[in-house]
Image (cartoon, rainbow, N blue to C red; front, side):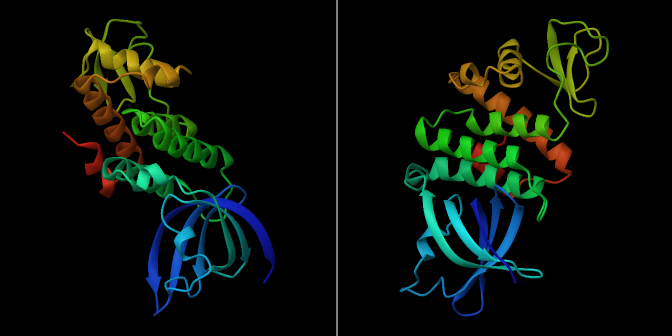
Length: 238
């Protein structure tokens, strides 16, 4: 076994035996890594509290055939505000689940890693309502499935765009309307998120617009994953 350093975000954990835990991480240099943290559930564990979901950690690991072994873990950011607010914690878990589904074991994806760390930092900081939806839409673009939101997916007309054609991958004009109706306000937010103006989109706080964009982003990501996100109830699915 070889020893290596990396840093990562804890995506999920589950118990192993009496005192150990398997930790799934999205790492900067090696993509998704599954590792055993030995004795981590003991009260005197050296790093038990550092390996909780959503923790950002610096790691020293031994590489194993199937599971690596954590030998050292130092906290880079515990994102404490997320753990003190159940709503924000639920949103964080939704992003962790999405990253888990999109990442591949031992295949580096530094952009996804950076996006997840940035989104968790934003959620812990300002806690803007559309951080999670913005993350979902941006990772879809990263995966090569960016929704077309600037013009009609059918004819290329730039507006007004009035419907979301999930199977086609974007917005539709009134002439070629298909799928769910979309408000002009939600269209503007989608265009901000995917047009490089995420900061502007995160200023949106109107509950009806936030709920609509949440719903669109969730459906788009689940359509790509071909599965439901178990944690998505934290985003108030309508």
